[in-house]
Image (cartoon, rainbow, N blue to C red):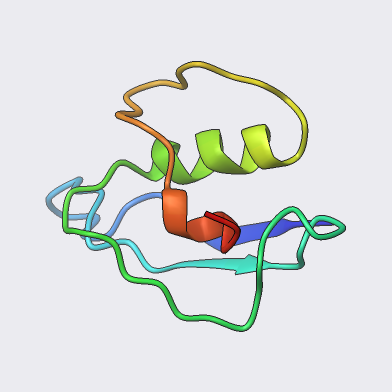
Length: 78
């Protein structure tokens, strides 16, 4: 199981999406490595995380929304 928790908007008065703290809990039966604090470059689309989670859970997906690619360090296997 993997639980993705966070907000949808960082600054509600400006309707911005970053910085957006996000918590990923669980390992998806070994799909991702846990126990880490990862920081990605500013303006990395949240959909990159969602795309990576889908792929690691066995749902092969090429693109999701405004995604620009998968987050390689998330799996901890690369």
